[in-house]
Image 1: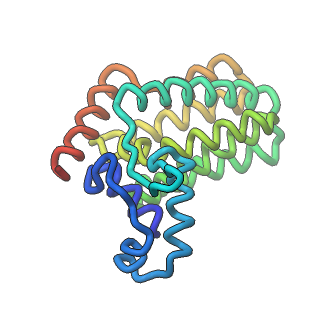
Image 2: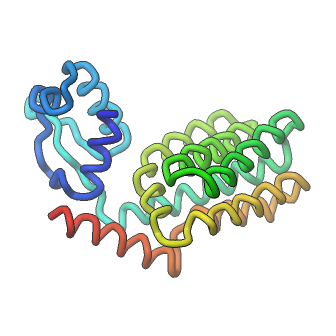
Image 3: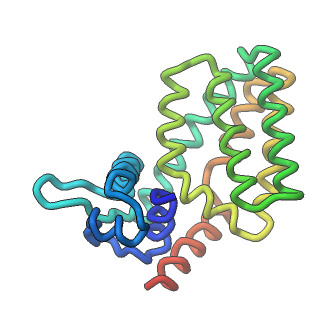
Length: 214
């Protein structure tokens, strides 16, 4: 709870870039001990949203837009490779898990909230990482996915994006089911990569959130 709250406040600009995060003050705000605050700050440090400077403290570090786009480009290639290998290597029992995750995404789209959809969306992606059969690749993809989580969640707030995301999930799943490595890789690359209108939409969402907060 503490991590997600701080994460959202950083992304929207409620906490300014370079602002010092004091454990005692945050513990009082959230009505918790310092331990969960410290753990939340450690997680945010690993995601790159805060920076710990020895003997000085912990500070907000908002990524600039070019850096964010660069991370999405790398994420798109990592996930494309995961999909390629998954299409080649996935076992039937693991394919069933991916299919179930896609069904859960579809249900969340129709009956749930944005957070419900994102949670199932995240599971869908994580299962594809694991289905690649390459633990090092899966770990790297997971690490970057967690760093980009607040921005991937922000994308889904764009009108019509969740429905489009679900359509892309179906295409990814279809390619993996028939073992089409190239189609699976391209479908997942296109699903993740920020380009064209999605670039404009994300930039507008990011700048408007920070402007409103400021």
